Image (cartoon, rainbow, N blue to C red; front, side, top):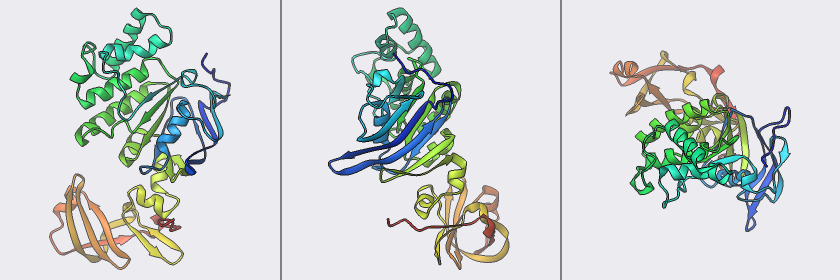
Length: 328
């Protein structure tokens, strides 16, 4: 029997969850909530505890301390099949002896759905991920992108209230990853399930998640709406991990100069130290009194950069002074 949603309850709630392996803390005192229809990204570097936390939520591991609640009910000791969730593993974990259709029908069959209804559900799920008409293909005949789509269809077929994805795009090349990010964004918007996405890729978090939980060394160090977390990181480590390039040590902390704070065409002309073409236009480094300042120029701005210098000034109201925890 699956947990029923209690009025006002979160779909998922973690209460001070911890897990240790061989005296090494993997997850430390993590508390999080997730609501139906929401996408939350667990974002952080490799080895920070993201995948361990996902396994604790899925019921594949048990926490040493804390509680996992779904729909207002404590499921900490419940097996995975009692949690009304589906998981897409990093290596997809498809059954090699089954074709695409049977792989996707497996979940509904395990939940007692008859063979004909399970097949109909599988065909509908495959169509949702762009694989209609290919249900007879064997797994070894599929490309990496197709295998990822089959794994996603298999996760969606049982109609879970919670969808867990562990680095779902990490095994794909960049071009395919960009394409599938768009597809995932559409699928997440269509489903009423809550989605918990584990990733180390800032672009995936930005494009797919409404909220972010930033993890470091087993702890959640910042949570919030995705745009706000990227705009206002809580520390120098968080800013650096989220991709901020302009961090300068100052009295009392680290000055973060986001690119939105750099006003071009005003102020002094600073010497251009480096010019690197990028997909956004051109990235340049300026010899600024604070230190080398990184600026991305649009194609139009880059076309006007003909001399050795570039006029720029900093709007200090857009800058932040952050604690320096990069060596902690």
